[in-house]
Length: 390
Ligand code: GLU
Image 1: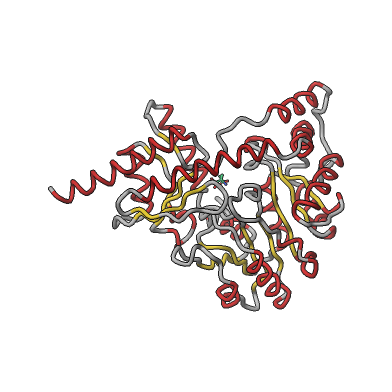
Image 2: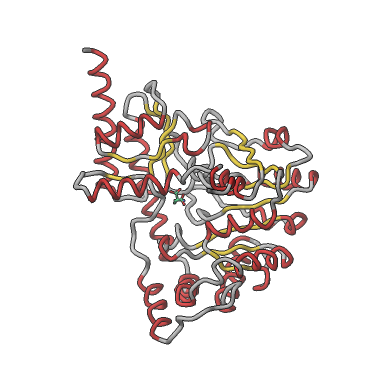
């Protein structure tokens, strides 16, 4: 009854788990959830007001399929100084960020072509490649090596069938930031082997102590790079579903066909909210970023106090990806923590084989929640130890 494409993929662990937590909370369970990567701040008021004004002014019909010129121009102006990417408005597509990744893969990957990405890496890259009839090739990084992605490891996985590399910096789930030097080496490899790079930079504004570098700013490879970013994480706009893709015009024209035959366009009032977000300067996102940094600095030492837990300080995004060395698989630990201790974490195995001893905890949650969540995890570990003694 169902296509092989859809039968071949599992549900999204992050989205499914968040749904489950919502259901359990509705049943009255006092669960603290650190599953979804979603800022807990409201969308800044001036953004909401701009969208409301647009609604009041009748912007409730179709917009251009590739995005409203106002927003594409604002993004073009924004990414020149910020990312070093010199793109005309015609080199930009307005899409939900996640859909942009899906669309890039659908547009660029043909049956049997291999796509390399980080392991551990975000839950949807593999399924997106599978749904394009491509072959996912997750390439491991290790905790011991600071979750650094080694260009030589990537090279050793390149075959004549390799078509693309997906990069995610800062990374979900590890929080690691790929240094410029490594990105340049990956760029050289892409040029040598004639590969495309799809660069997912949705956490680009959430970096702490280090600089974000966009691989699409490297002039000699810019035509083979598609950069995807968006408003969800930096501007607390997850529910708005708005982001962008930038790359050379020929690619954008092809992606636009996919948009026209699927979602048509993004709602114009949403796009006007996004214009307001870019026009307001950086202060609102810097305040949120600073708060995430302080939460990170609160959380990581607390986690490291729990016996069997170890966590390096993440440089970006808003996830603690910590090792839980208790002799259980991460999926089993997640179930036990949820049902026994009422704390919801995403099991590391959802992000690939290299994540199996790890748990992901989003710190886009209040300080009170983080403190209470760590207490519950600590009590759970103590209860296991007591159980062993009996
Ligand atoms: N990207 C976020 C996360 O990893 C939201 C859910 C999703 O799209 O996977 O939690």
